[in-house]
Image 1 (tube, one colour):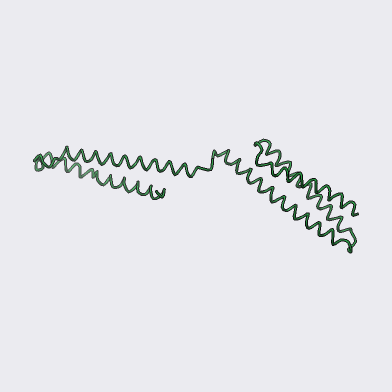
Image 2: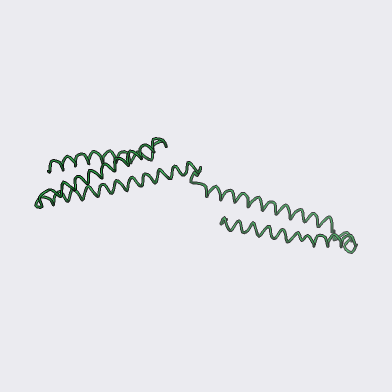
Length: 188
């Protein structure tokens, strides 16, 4: 019986060495080869589990006085199997993250790119606000000159009332508030 167990041990050792080697190569392979390698490792893990079950059955048939040594070996092999499964899961997660990034075109800098894009838009909004203010200032100076004496004329009052209805300064304030909110959102 112990010779069968030792044969299973050798098979298990060879199989786990192959699995370990393949798991370490998974993240570096091209996508097509990765799929094949993942499927291959899954099959080999199943084979290793079956070997462990066979070894466990062999240990149960060993007389109780010599079973302790083999039970300790089995615990060690089960721990090794658990470690292989954990490593394989990590390898698959790394593989799935790479596939996700390829599919979505996510290069890991998307939040940085979004932040840069928002900052550019905020700067553009601020430039537009300054141009609007400058245009408003020009409109005030040309339509309602204080030094020209036209302040009391009907035309000056009408232009003033039109400008007040449009409330251009209020529009500028709203625009500034929105740009400030965008800046706070970006944590400028």
